[in-house]
Each structure stands twice: as structure tokens, then as C-alpha cells.
Image (cartoon, rainbow, N blue to C red):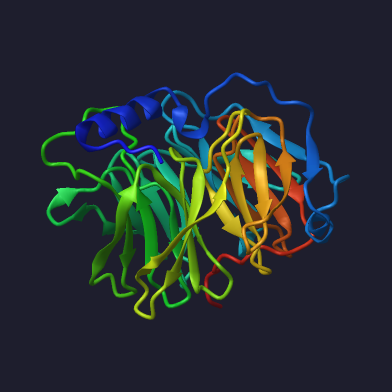
Length: 335
């Protein structure tokens, strides 16, 4: 494994972010035509190789960050996503297209909802995780750890008990200061927001994270190392570190690294990687790849009335493809 330590690591990661390297991998291999690539017969149960890959909108992103954080808002039938560079939150409505939802957003990245249907956002500029209350006010969920400002929260998920998990890599183009954290972390916040715990600090660039359907496993990918790691969860919600294992390696000659990640109700894992979106079964077997034609996959989200539309963002566009197994639903506002 590649190991970078101290300020040299931080400067390297900042440089990667500045040039848009988070969602890119070395090499200039061009993508071929769009296709569903089958690697194992089990893929037939998940997606048809003849399923068309849709381009929905483009023109997003820029040097400070790509299109990111897609999130299906089920009760209203639309998709929210982040346009980080342009400091906007966009809304895609099937059959209507894309419109501006919110500006500015503090260059928010990853988005999700809590058990009450409130929006959680990882804000780059303010280096914090926030919650948009139902009355429109904003609550700061996390902005520091042990007196030091967070790096740049990236992605966030909520467990069925209401606890919040998020990744916090250093991805700022600015040089780190003496008051900044010296590591990239993954954190857990209790449902009452009373306790924030550092779960692990030995990732180079922790990015996407997702639970297995039974919430016994937490998947976390490392964009810099090009793989997904899996951890069993302890009863108190922390990581059983002795179970740490590499779940899947997603490097390759084509552009793209592990970034946003989601899981369907059967436990299959969907994650960006070299050449497109990889579909991986719960044992870590690669079943296939959705080659959508863009040079990187920044994030993905299940949506639609049946949660069987897989939306994806790249550095500058939004696309979708239909699948046969529903994704794990995102909470909605209780009736």
C-alpha cells in the first residue's frame, strides 16, 4: 500500500484536489462506447446488458470540484445533486430536466437524509457537516474534533438508529495550517449529537461509505489507494478493527477511482472505479461494470418510485440507468 505521512501527504492531497484529481486516475486511456459489461452470470439478476445508459444533463463542475452527492427525494419525485465548483445545489425532475435548487451551498459535496427526512450536507468551504431543519434553520452537526477544525467532510450516511457516519479527507487546495488535523478520519456521531467518535484514521483519502442491508458491515473506500475496505460493526456502532479487510480493488488503466458508493437491498455494492461503475456482490466478486463514457464516476444514488433507477454524477454530467434490484431506500419525512 502507498503510505504518505504528515504534511507531505496533506500537500499531495491538496494538489490532487486542486487539479481535479480526486475522481481521476493516471493514464489517458479514452473510454469506449457506453455499455453494460458482464463479468459473471449473476449480473443478469441485477441489470440487463442491453439496458440503455441515459445522459440527463451536463455542464457542471470545474477546477474546485465536480457534480457530486446525488440524493433522491422520494416524496417529491426529484433528485438533488451538488455542483461543487459553482456553489450550487441542483434539482433534476424526470421529464422536466435540471433547475437551480439552492445557491450558495458553501460548496457542499455529499448529501443524505436522516430518519426525520432532514437534509444532511458535507460543506467544503466551511469544513463542516450540517442539517437543514424542517423549519428551514441550519444545525451544525460537526465542525471540529478535539479542538481542531475538520479537514473537508466529503460523504455522509445515517444508520437506522439515527447515528451519523461521515468521511473527512484533506482535499483542500490550501496548504494545511498548524491548527488543522494531521490525519484523514472517519467519524460517528450519536443520534442525540452528544458524542462524536473517531472510528479510524489510517486511510489516505477516505471517500464514499455505505452500510450492508443488515448494517453489520460498513464499507469505506480509499480513493487514493484505489480500493474499498470493509469493517464489521461492533454493537456500540464503532468499527471492529480486527475485521478490517480489502473488499475490492478498483484500480485499472482507465480513468476513475473509488468515490461515491451505494448498496442495494440484496447487498450488492456499486462503486465508481477504473472505467465506470463496478457492481460487486457481497462476497467481493466483481459481477460487471457500467461503462457510462465519462472519465470518472464521482457519486451514485438509487431513486425512482421503486428505487430501481441508478443515478450517477461524473465530473461534469448527470446520468442514469435502470437496474432490477432496488437500492437501499433513503429516509423520507415521516407522514
